[in-house]
Image (tube, rainbow, N blue to C red; front, side, top):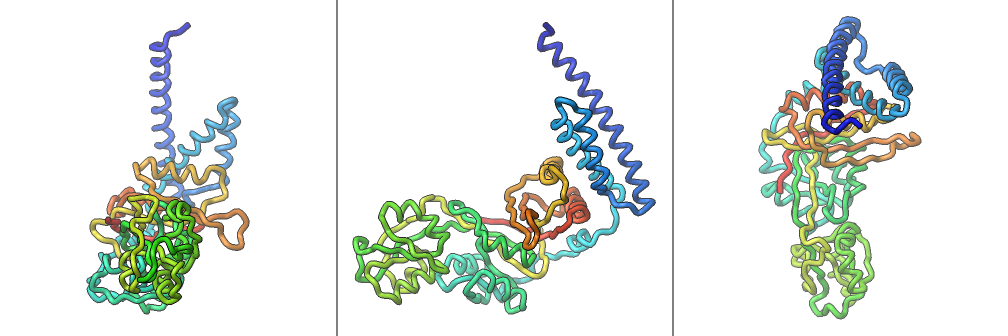
Length: 376
């Protein structure tokens, strides 16, 4: 039997041959790119790629599926080489290059969902301490306020460390395609607040936003409270004060309890002591700060088997760290999806901008949603 040392030596020899063949293939891809450039042909040829992948799978025999996967990655990398050579004018590249940092936000008009004392209101105060803050009833009202020009920016929660994504906001992001220009991770601490004359033993029902109820699910379950969903945590505090029922309390921020004259009956209700909500700032204009460290995109994929995997290969080849991926069905199209994706990076890195421009050429639908700084 051949020993392990000899087997590894054989693998090393095969690897050297594979690298040599890979380099030859990339050199030929460059020649293909020159031909396509001269003849105004697109880089991506789905029919040709499908034929190559099917042929590779057949030639691979018992390893057919693995060979197809390898070729899928190979063709992604080959396509990237061709884009570098063709490097045609791209509107996205121009838009990114012309983007300026955010202007003075001292008197910015800022929309948030809910009322005074809500988490979104607190996030707005942190990000725009001297801004002109405007409250709106729903998340879509915030988008509409920015759309109509009533406000320059909108503040929205997109994800909580305990309850997960705020699906309604992601749906609106994909529908409106506004730019994300800032993000803020804010610690969330909830109290139980009731009427001044109430005691903890009086409480039977608790009112709050569904996300807050989810973040405090262990607490409410242990106490046996009946959860009552409402539109906002601060609205829950206000309604508790208005209804004047001894058995009703709100799960809300401490500032909301103070704002609406409620008595704090219990503290730190959240299941996760490190409970945090990520807020974003949306704008109709693209602004990119010098210290931007996160990129957001949305896109649909070509109807090719393994297209999502192949896309992720491109990010991996550049060493880019994906931090979020969400999918949403496209209305009116069966089993077709829009993807929302976040990754760590900056468009000031040449490879990142090139990748975005390439994807904008390839994807059936593509939107660059911004490059922004995320801070705690």
